[in-house]
Structure formats: structure tokens, C-alpha cells
Length: 290
View 1: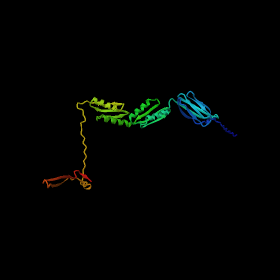
View 2: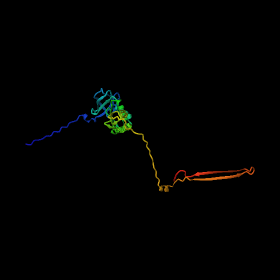
View 3: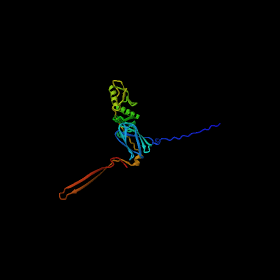
View 4: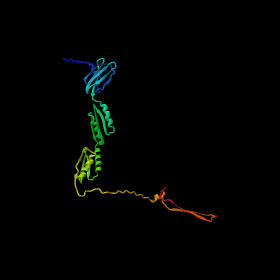
């Protein structure tokens, strides 16, 4: 005997809220009202926690005025005139305006290279590699003024090496070696007095906050020192005969001497005068190059 199989199809009708628009997020600031406009005629409006955000609905103008009262998060549900849910908006209230704080931090640190300033909810995050230690100190001063600013910056590894070389140059002792390790400056080597050790540490302290001084002191009667030296720089120029022929290099300081004279007589007094002058000219006193 054959069995008859019956397949029953059930059709369910989804409730009206299934056609609601996707949820959105909006942030508000305490005591700063916000007006939101809608394209449809509003019906019922509900807010999850009126202690965080209250509202006033103007159905004729299709808008809602949000009144944030205290920091927190709540949900705003908006229905149309047919009773269908159209919007589900998550409202987050901050004690201060994070967007305004973001612009202020960017303005204060606009000359600092290698960093990125962004907003994460109500927090302002500063991230990246800072090249100069002065810029790192500047960022730390900005961060201390607000609990909403997070500093994730770090010094560039090349910066520490550059600082180490500069410290070694300022110390000026060949027996002192300066290197950087994990953001700290290490002084190594051997000096010949306690004063030299303390001087090296003070110089390093001007450039870095964390200085590890492991210099050994070996006192001897006549420690080596740098003697005063004189540096002489000389330039030699050699001119061949072909150069003289091709470029007409002349130097012939030969004087040319010439003389002039005149004789006059007065027939009344009988006196006579003899005048004259001797002149000499020297050409090519300095070498010439045509």
C-alpha cells in the first residue's frame, strides 16, 4: 500500500518593525541640543532612557529636538504615522565635545612630524614615531591637560643613536664610548679621574633623562691628553709649457724710460732757463692671462 506524502507550506507574515531602517549612531554633548530631521511623517517616538537624552517631537515639521542631559548611551526609536518602525538610532552622550578636542590637539601638535591624531569614541589617540625628544615632551604636556587624550607615541630608534653620537662628541674623550639601548644612554669605557666621570654624566644628562654611567676610573700620575696642534692646508698649482702657449700667459716686468726737455732765453735780462723731466713706466708688473 502506497503512502501519501503531504507537504504543508506555512507562510508567516512578518511584523511591521521588520522593515525598519538599519540602525545608526549619533553622538551628543551634555547640554548641547541637536535637531534631527526626517523625510516621513512621524508617529510614535520612544527613547530608552530619558534621564540620558530627552526629546521634543515636531511632527508638522518632521523633526525631533534631542536634549542630552548626562553622559551615557541610550536608544531612540522613531515610527511613522502607520505605526511602522523607521529608525533605530543609538545615542551616545559625552561630557565634552570630542570633535572639538580633536581639532585643538591637532592644532597644538601641527608641527610635530611622524604622528597620527585620531578620535576613538570620546578619546583622542596620538600614535606614531617621534623623531625629536623635544616633540615627545611637547606631546606629554598636552596629554597631562586632559584625561581624554591617550599618548601611544614612541621615539624613533634612529633618534637615540643620533643623540648618543652627539653626546660622545660633546664629551670629547676618545676613551668614552656612548651608545643607546632601549631608550637609555649608556656611558662605557675608562677615564682617568672622578671629575671626568662626573663631567661625562652631566653632559649626557643634558640630552637624555635616563643615563647609565658604567665608566671605570683608573687614576694614573700622567694621564694622556691631547696636545695642541697646528693644521696647515696648502694648495699647489702646476702650469705646463703648453698652458703658457695656448693661453698666452705673460709676465715681463720691463720698465720703459723716456725723457723730455726745453730751453728758453730772455733777450732783455739775458737770463736763460733749462727745464726738463724724466718719466719712467713699467709695464706687465703683474702676470696676465688672456
